[in-house]
Length: 370
Image 1 (tube, rainbow, N blue to C red):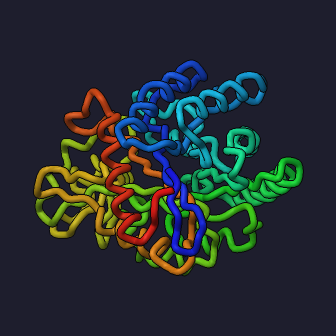
Image 2 (tube, rainbow, N blue to C red):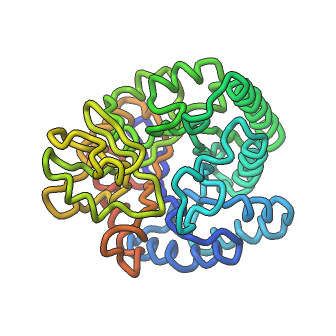
């Protein structure tokens, strides 16, 4: 969906398809004609934006077979779908039975991460609508924090230089500017926007910047104004909500302790890498906990639990409720629908409800649908 900001610029709203399990081209086409098309129908919009996730296998297939890339573009157009952003964080196997720490590999010290990302950039340049000249890709915050060495840092620096060079060359060849956003996340080398400012201050800011994830920021107890103060371009916002448990009520979180994804958990004075560790006594029970579990934007879990939706609303105001927007790509990223307690058998209605909620938040900030 496209919305007009008060300054006349276009803000793109999409939902991320990493919620869907398919990792090959037939499965991706099935997502488009299935859930995505139904979400568009439920919302009653002419165009629905997708933050497309392509596994390494699917991306390699599209790169090797130009006819398949052309067919994907045609399919998107026929279904009233458009892609201006990709989620390039998960590499593959994002819906395996156990993902956990594997989602951070290969990291930015690995040349394979560079190849994968440049391949995505080429694909996105071809998928952009004819009237759009800028696309974005979100990616992991360099690496998970363990095993970080001086040699690994040097490899990351070399790969960031190489990806910037590749994106510059792509823009010169196609006229399409693809910008890469590093996504701070608890537990990683880049956990927060201040850390991003320190580690990414010297990169090419025409092509490299930040992807802010509202859930991650809330879990890290970050000031919502931190992104605006970082000095880095915010190429993309991932609209997401974290789980929040009040003091001495954390046992209610047990239903969310599932085995597939990593659920970093933080309090004001401590942290654990996963929710199970926190429930086993890893965090003080007399403090509020925030959990990296992306929960639906429009809904709240049963009391006493809550979500960080107020934080997301504040962040939207910081980024978009101003004279000029600080980002123009907003992606709803609730990838956990299938592991929620009592997960619905049909997630199309839930995704549509999230997007409807987001439309209302953006309308309250003065953005108008186009």
